[in-house]
Image: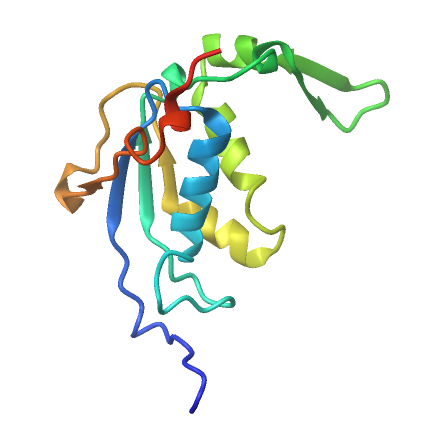
Length: 153
């Protein structure tokens, strides 16, 4: 029996649409990371980008449990004394609320060149509209997968 290894010609990429309204952030991020990586497919190959293209809408209406809205997100500017921080609530109410979802998914992928390539297959939008109607994406209902996916704080 030989081990199956997918080649670029074997990979079949689908487009998936996920509505993030009322869904818990960590649970959504783990499902999206699995879909982006391709682990839900029987033809999964660890060194190939065999996952799907994922579109997330309503990222500004994501749910965070407990006190996670008040947790700080830190980054450094690269200059001395350049540590900065914002709470997740400030980011969600700011100009780019989709960054919370993007960063959560990015941190659930391995930190290598392949995951940076995989992240190009993720599109996150704060509102309900997206410009990918021509790809006719399939709707993935994350809310109905598990009752814990929609619990509120």
